[in-house]
Length: 63
Length: 202
Image 1 (cartoon, helix red, strand yellow):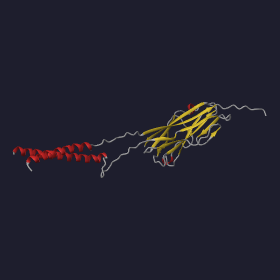
Image 2 (image 1 turned 180 degrees about the vertical axis):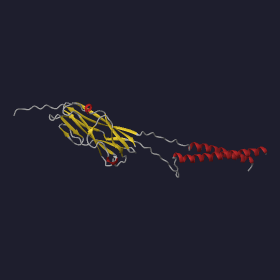
Image 3 (image 1 turned 180 degrees about the horizontal axis):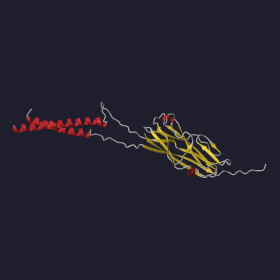
Image 4 (image 1 turned 90 degrees about the vertical axis):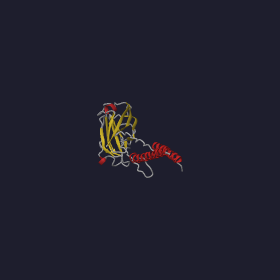
């Protein structure tokens, strides 16, 4: 193998390794931690309802 | 020949640098895995679950509907335990139920949007009464069973702690708030009261 071929081969290996390094780094870049902010407080509500109608007036009759 | 030797040396250095770069990158990523929880077949996933206070009303509406006070006495008493005395409203069984559906024990307090006068109105008899009592719907919901109030007690806009330590365990995470009201015969109209429950993670 002559020197020119060795040089070309080494340079190709260099290029491949460099590209591989870049791709590897990009694909395995760290995911950012998702920090969720959870409130220590929570509230909820219930409802009470009624309708108050007028008391019916009862008429009494003589027995 | 001399030029060729220089080229070979430069090429070897380039290959070496690229190799070092690759090794360093892999090494850094390996370190990052242990921090972020990045998982592989043999890696360890680290997970941190934050405490979340969360409550909800399983039964959030008490509606007695329409009704009137009997001629005598001058007031009617209603509660959510199936009692209607002196009035024509339908009896209701079952109060409001509050569930701790979060993943942490909480301190639970409640308050009303109004007091008896603003909620019910009227003045006949002893006047309007608005009271609550709290019971464990599931035994053990409140640490040591210390719910408050356990007997009917006047309720208004002032927040009260009904359970200092409400469990998040699904087998014991439910409280019932029973309502007891007295309606004077001179109260009229559609009435409503909102009960707000607030949970604070322990």
